[in-house]
Every structure is written in C-alpha cells, then in structure tokens.
Image 1 (cartoon, rainbow, N blue to C red):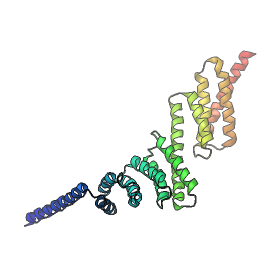
Image 2: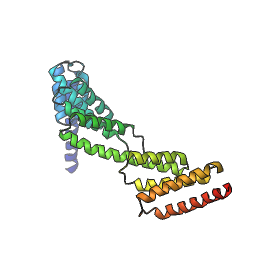
Image 3: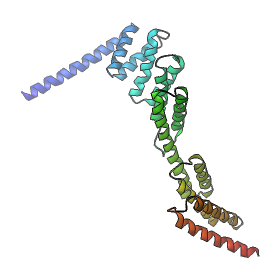
Image 4: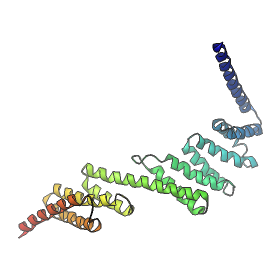
Length: 271
C-alpha cells in the first residue's frame, strides 16, 4: 500500500511539473507581448527569477518606450541579481539608471548597481579591481543620495572594503619582505603608512621598516652599506618615539645596536 501511495505522489509531482513547463512553453510561443509581460511579472513575484528573466529578455526590445518597459527593465536587472549573476545585474542596474534617471526606481537601481559590484569583490588575497570599482560606485551613490537609507548601508560597505584593501596591502608588503625583495618591501611599507594611517598594523609596519633597512644593508655591496645602516637607525628612532612600549622594541633595539656597531667600523676605516 505504501509503495502505491509513493508512486501516486511521484506521478502527481511529475504531472504538476510537466504542466508548469507546458504552460511556460505556451507563453513563450505566444505572439502577444502583453501575455509574456504579465507572466514575467507574475513569475518574478513568485520568485521564479529564471523564467521571469527569460521572458523579459524576449520582450524588452519590443516594448521599448512603453509604460511597461520601465518596470520590466528594473525587474530584469533584479532577475540576474537574485540568480547570483552579479556581473550582469551590475550592468543592467547601471543601464536602467542611464535610461530611466527620473524613475521612482532610479535611486534603488543606482544602489543595486554598486551593491552588485560589491558582491563581486573577492577575498583579500585575490585581485581587487572589482573592489575598487565597488568603492567608486558606492561613494558616487552617497554623493548623489547622502540622506537616503541606502547611503548608511553604503557607508558600512565602504568601511568593510577598505579593511579588505588594507589587509591586501599589508600582506603584499610582507610578501616582498619574505621573498627578500627588500627595496620593494620598503616602498610598500612606506606606502602603507601613508595610505592607512589609522591601521592596526601601523606599529608592526614601523618596526618592519627598521628590520628591512637593516637586512638590505647586510646584503648590500660595501659602498651602499653605510647609508643603509643609517636608514635603519633613523627608522628605529622614529619607531621608538612613536611606540616606546612596543612588543617589537627588544628586536628593534638589537637591530639598532648592531647598526651602530657597523657604522663604527666604517668610521674607523675612514680615519
């Protein structure tokens, strides 16, 4: 008896699914764009974003300039967003804003363009081109709609993306040091200090400059060493003044003492 009931249930599910597909295919074959438009809106409201998007794609070129086109294009952009196709949703939200700049949906579409770019932003170890694009779009939105609720959310996202870029810059600078590209590391550390003055990594970066100048001096030809040991000492003095109680202080003092000793050798040679 249980098997019979199961078979009946499966048959009903298949029949319903087939009926739904049959109905959808009938709508797609229709020559009446209004039939497709109304079905697309209904599918969208039922959260069937794939079918909604398919139908809208067919009729949007036909209904261009009509009253229905505005909502149709807005839903079309959202249909991609809800399917996780953020490259396409960012494009179509941006297109909507360009075409319907005075629409009641323009502000939301502008935000969703920026938000779709944000959704494309990868983890900090990967290329951050889309992150920069998202930051530009979010800031542009805030400048245009500073008092909107979306602006508050945009501010929060900007902070999140800035942290991601900060971590990317920090890791890149450390990588240069780890692979012993000391000159590149020094440039990266200095750029980090300038670009992220409030970063939690500022103390460590200040110490890393001392360490990197010292390590560079140690592997340099003799004619370059004196100047580079002096750079290490100068960075140590800056570090000490700003972080007198640093966890890195003991190591920095060792580097400072050794640099002083190296300079004394050059002084002896010059006398």
